[in-house]
Image (cartoon, rainbow, N blue to C red; front, side, top):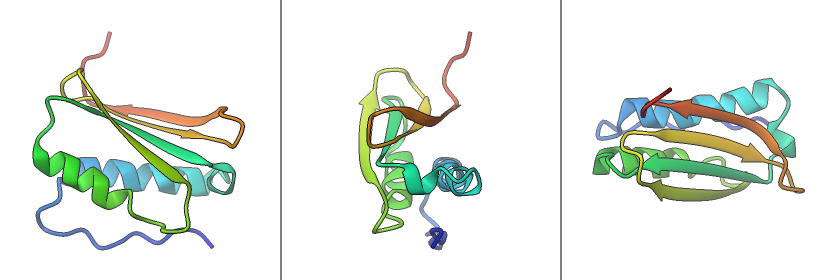
Length: 101
């Protein structure tokens, strides 16, 4: 059964929480979610506490889902979401914010 979005609390950072939930929806729509063993979230060190809390809240679902890993990076403002299968192969990766180019 595909994961259901939890309701977002008013204190959540809408961009970060929405990015994580949208990433999981992309995994489901591309039939990759059932093959996902690990979700990796890299959050830039310049992010606010609200962003960290929004990411952690979004990662709590679905409870029966893949393992989750949160990495605090030095690149300010970056949010990178990656999904890996059981063998460690990258299934899907998305970058939000941060410096490009």
